[in-house]
Amino acid sequence: MSGGRQSRAWTLGGAAVLVAVWASGLAIAAACGAVELPWKGTVSVVAAVCLAGAVGGWLLARLGDRLAANPSAGRHGLAVAVGLGGVAVRLLLPLAMLAWLRSTAGGAAPAGADRVLLGLYLSLLATDIVLTIIGRAGSAPGRGHSGAN
Image (tube, rainbow, N blue to C red; front, side):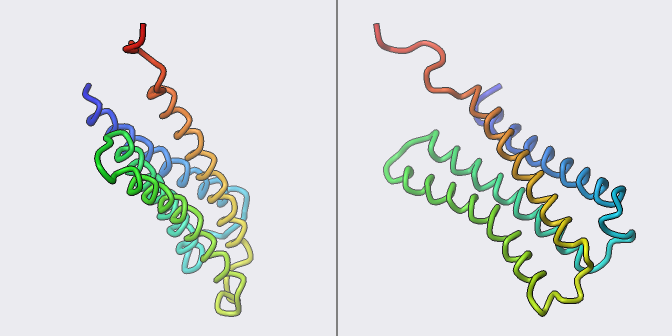
């Protein structure tokens, strides 16, 4: 398998794992009674924002890795900017949602919405960290043949 195909497969596989963890988190929240079924309104938006932040952050971080892996003139700065954009998306979308839930505009939010947001965010963040560590293990710079004697 070529490096480009393997990279795309890892990116899509990681996104699929994040979606699976997200769905599991919603199922656990329902089983624990954190929110009542059917999920309507605010809880649906909270879940969607968590998923968008996690998958969007994952995809941007992978794009940053891909840009850094293929160095050319001026791409290192772009790779860093895209990587930081991934962190911002992963963090700021759920943080903005939490601010809205705690504001007067979100005052009618169900009592469990903030707990669902926190649970989903932390589980997706932990999954992203594990996926990043696993993905880095196969691409360590010291592996394989080196040109040094």
